[in-house]
Image (tube, rainbow, N blue to C red; front, side):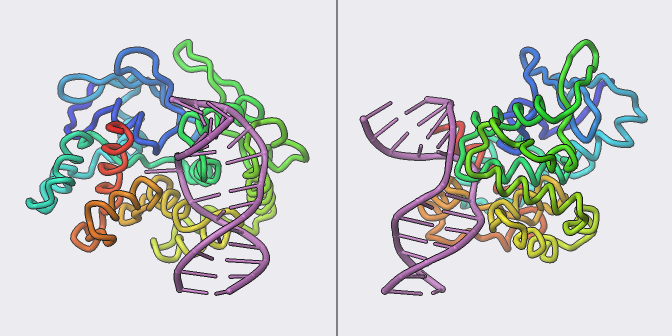
Length: 265
DNA sequence: ACCCAGGATGGTG
DNA sequence: CACCATCATGGG
């Protein structure tokens, strides 16, 4: 079905570093898995074309693409004299904050630490291929994201190229299986509560906690600061970014900056 | 061969 | 509080 929507550019989202499992099937055409579902999306002049029903769009994918939010308002709120940010929004204004699976975000962003995006994708692919379940959609074969139970099996995380992060993931998976970590409970928390709870998990600090909040818990006020963002804050904002101006959606602004940086340097 | 990566931890001053 | 070595691995 055809969706008419502005400020949604699949290519920009695919290279925005928030999703690691989109598969490029052709020019501006992607296979997208999420939470046990799968969709094929293609960019059109005034929106996107999806191989799902209206019911599936209304019930799941509209939320996934944050389609009910007005990103024009976010862009228009940018400080007019902030030429750097206006330029970032100009090159990256097609990004939306995807509502992804919290468990997948936890695992993915633990893997992301001190790592580069191509290798993050490879590690996650290896994880899914080894511990996920084989599935098929529209002739495309793929692997689902592994459950905590699968990842908690002894030696399950060996030989996947995860590096030193495997011990964080093993502990996380065990705690989720035991019930020591309750992801559903965290989903129901405020940003501040969820962030504090996430930071208590072995291997999760400020940055990863904010990524999970932003991409997995729908907390658009989260503003993850990685090396790129910190560099921009130092070079363009005198060491302090005015997040209060963008109250409630600073994470959207953060994505414009991040994408603008990694695609132009 | 070298530097770097969507950082976090544990130790030290 | 701030700094700092260390952590696996491989992309560029």
